[in-house]
Amino acid sequence: MGKEFLIGEELNGQDVTLTIKNVLIEELQNAKGKEKKPVMTFDGTDKKVVMNVTNMKSVAKALKSPYPEDWVGQRITLTPVSGYFFGEQQTVIRIKQDFSKVKIN
Image (tube, rainbow, N blue to C red):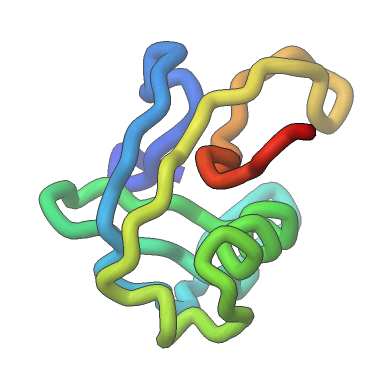
């Protein structure tokens, strides 16, 4: 996809918290041809993240809104997750949920 997009390995095993600048629909080239996908941009970096369904749902849950326009200016934490995805070992980006306010009895 090119160097403009952040991939899991670039997080170097660490969480990264960023402020959302925008979520736009971009036409991207992949193995199947061109496809329109949501792409998240952030303040302070030119790197973008191509959002999949899992990450879109995670951001909606973390920010308590299903509407990307409500996410602008909000902070999220990207976390690298290693495992087998689509039949191969790789590190992907997931959205870390804030469990700091969870109380365990």
